[in-house]
Amino acid sequence: MEVKNKLTVPILDLRRSFKDIKPEVFEALERIFENQSFILGSEVSNFERHCEKYLELPEGSAVGCASGTDALLLALMAADVHEGDEVITTPFTFFATSGAIARLGATPVFVDVDGATYNINLEQAVSKINEKTKIFLPVHLFGQMCALEEVKKVFAEKNIKIIEDSAQAFGSSRTVNNKIERAGTVGDIGCYSFFPTKNLGGCGDGGMVVTRDSKTAERLKRLRVHGSGTTYYHDEIGINSRLDAIQAAVLDIKLKYLESWNEERIKIADYYKLLFKASGLREFITPPEVLENNHHIYHQYVVRVHEKRDELMNFMNENGFGVRVYYPLSLHLQPCFKYLGYKEGDFPVSEQLTREVLALPVFPGLLPAEQEQIVDCMKKFFRV
Image 1: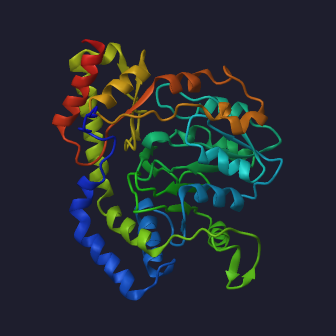
Image 2: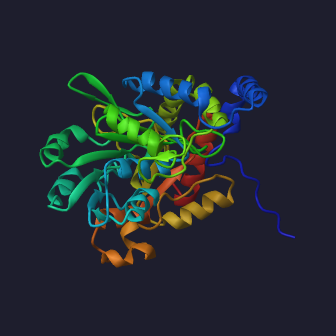
């Protein structure tokens, strides 16, 4: 009987950071079960207030919801996106971004991405504006912000709202004119995911929508509870998307550690870069590029492999190192979006990335020795 190699370093190990907060989490869970208050309530409102403080937003700006996907859907609903509207976005990201657009009957309008940062090409995004454009929906991918200040005024002049998909970027920021701007707070509405694998992740699904506009915030609060402002009285048709107390309590504890955990991710990324340079792998591997003035928090550490990406991935997995592809097929080529009429070759950079990107382990608690083992495995494959 063949015995498979035991995984040496997984793509993500949440247990390492959890051990430091286990007593606090269990104490919070006991409190919730003693109170038997599980939906919304004080745990959620406390977490919302703490997020507002962290993001430097006015009180009442943060609205917890059931998932990052729902955050996108709620944001689009609050922006009155309907059938016939167009939303400019990226084809190189997780499906939920465009799935939320399509669910409302609107049309995702894709533009290509930048090959160095993997984020949407802002110049191309502006070129797609027409009379049907309702929303610009950029994604701060893998933990790095787009330079939205370059296009914000253009979209505002056209009365096009910006909804930021910050699902992978809670804690990411960008310095603009000596001021720190956090992902999700630059546009009209920001959306976050608290899926367990995120830098700020719960113990199940969870999400949040933020906005500086108080009227939009109040509407989002209604939309997350079936459009009800007063119980059993419905101003409009919403959805059931409430953040539960257990998720909020766990997230509130983790929020206190987020900055130190993100700093650890940055150190891990810096060490990978040093190892690639010292090992001679730069001929085969291109590390992610950090845009000037950006605070990249490395939700994923994604490199480009110039040749034999899939073979390298299989080799590393077989040798006990968890690596993964984010994302193997651009959204414009997904079968469910065939009706949009896109074809292979329409977005060459995005398509090339799907053939080259590879995510390496990056998480709080990852040891330098483990990173060295990962890079040594890559050296063996390329025979460096």
